[in-house]
Image (cartoon, rainbow, N blue to C red; front, side):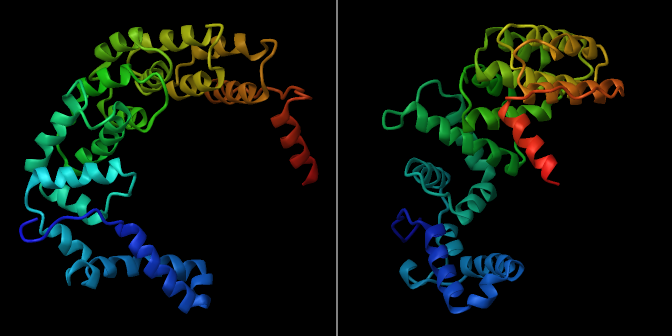
Length: 291
C-alpha cells in the first residue's frame, strides 16, 4: 500500500455489525426473509464502496485498491488465512485483477515441498486450499500433475483434499495414467478421492475393474462404491453389486445405495428388505407410517 500502513481488519465482521444495526432499526423488513436477503446483498455491495471513518476516509474496496504490489496482496491474503479470518472480497478481487503477477507467486506456494519457518504444515494446507479456486477465477492453468501428487498424500479428508479433487474433475481422462500410479500408492481418503475421479471416466475400461475390485475388499466402503459404480454407468457392475446386496451384516444405508445403483443400471426393480433394528430403517419406517 503506497501511502498507508496495512492493517488486518475483519471487514466481514464490520459489515455484520452495520447489518445488525439495520435489522434492529427495521425489524419488520428483517423478519421477511425475501426482503432481508435482498437487502443484505444490496447493502453489502453499497457498503464496500462507501468511505469509512475507521479507514481514514476510504471505502473497503478502495482500501485494497491502493495495494499495487503483488507480494503485498499475497501476504495480506495469507495473513487473513493464518489468523482464521475471512478473506475480504475486495482483496480477492485485487488478487484476481493482478493475476499475471500474483499467479507465479501462487504457483511457488503450491510447488514448494516445505512450508516457511513461521507457517505450519496445516496452515500451508489451508492456504493452498484457498489458492486453488482463485486460480480458477483467474483463468490461469492449474498445475494438475502437482495436484495429483498432492492428493496422493491426503490420507484424511481436508479442505485441500476436497479442492484438489474438485479441480481434477475438470481433466477428464487426460491424466488417468498418472492418477492410476498415484492411486496404487495412496491410502485413506486419497484412495477414495481417486476412485471417485475414476468413476467419472466412463471411457476408461480399467475403471470398472478398479471399482469392482475395491467393492470386493473386506473393508470396502460399500455405499460410496455403489454410488461410484452407478455414476460410471457400466452394466457389468450389476452382477458385482448383487453379490454384495445380500451380504450378512449389511447396513440399511448400504443396501439402499446398492439397490438404487442396480435399479439405475439394469432397470430392474428390487424388493425392499426388512432391516428391523437398523436405526435409519426404523426412522424412515416410522416417518412413512406417520404419513
